[in-house]
Amino acid sequence: MSPRGYKFRLPSHPLLQVVYVLLGGIVLIGALFMGAVLLTVALILGLIIGVVALLRAWWLGRGRPRPARGRPAQDGQAAGKLLDAEYSVVAERDERDGRGH
Image (cartoon, rainbow, N blue to C red):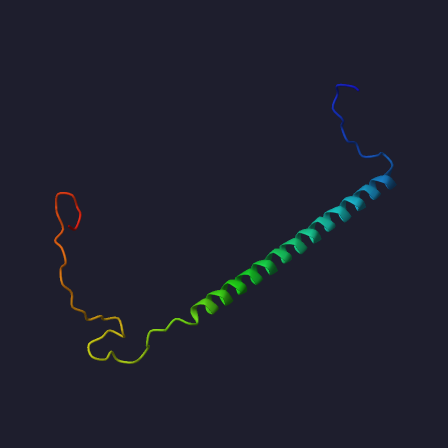
């Protein structure tokens, strides 16, 4: 083997040059078509995954109660968000160690 690098040369015959140009064009068009097909497949898969995610979120959230819209709050409650309760302190927090007993 010679240590020289290989240099690609077009053939000197005009007919072979035309054939090379046509083959190169076919390869280029094929690459563009293949890229378009792969891009279309990727977009379709993304659309399917998005629809599945939306359906899953809807399915999981369908059992939760929704906040009332347009209805006025009753008895001073802000649409069911107010909680009225009584409590009593069981033990005071000790400031020295941070525990409640």
